Image 1 (tube, rainbow, N blue to C red):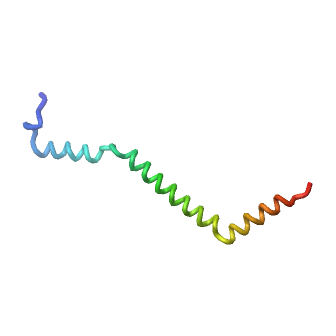
Image 2: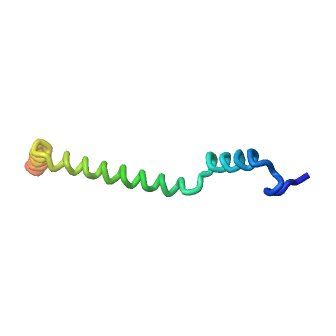
Image 3: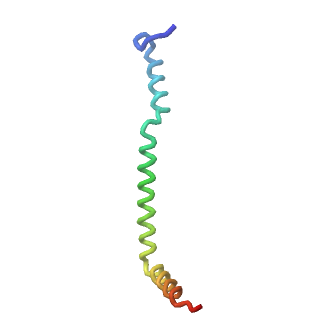
Length: 72
């Protein structure tokens, strides 16, 4: 026999709502994209900080100069 919402006990209705809340995946892909975007931006900022640092800039400049002055 199928019961409507009006005839089900309140505890059963509450359990049903809680179960839906716990297992509801709507909006998860949006959250995943947001977290991925924030992580990519943070990684980009970190990479920019490292690459524009004096020691890395000096090393990269030396590497490029050495590569351009190689004789065959």
